[in-house]
Image 1 (cartoon, rainbow, N blue to C red):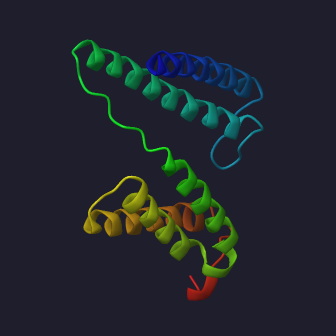
Image 2: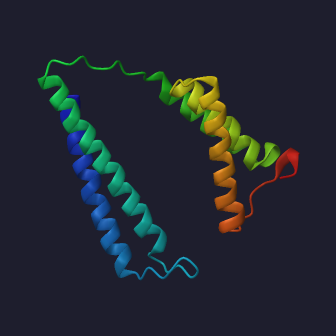
Length: 152
């Protein structure tokens, strides 16, 4: 039953993403240096389409697994609560702590608690994510990111 719901949700979001991309394209995309009004909606729709294809793939894979008599993995619903609390804390503390350090802490929490990883993977993954996000937003996009207590 849940597999079927995931499949239909994936189809719905795929359809929705196609409409979003089509309508955004009609608004004129522009380019990376001078984005038009449809630039961000188009890319959002494109990413939404990719994620919906992943949901469809997982739903089909789960069906094949169930057909072979595979065991279903237990769901960890408390992760949703942890993610919502962590996102709220991230937004509240962004100005005071700063983007780089706050992103590192947030990703560390996600990698260690929500999807448990080894300490090495957690620290390395959080560090890489924070540095790449900082490069994208500060260097490439020249966005005004809060420096926080560390000054960078």
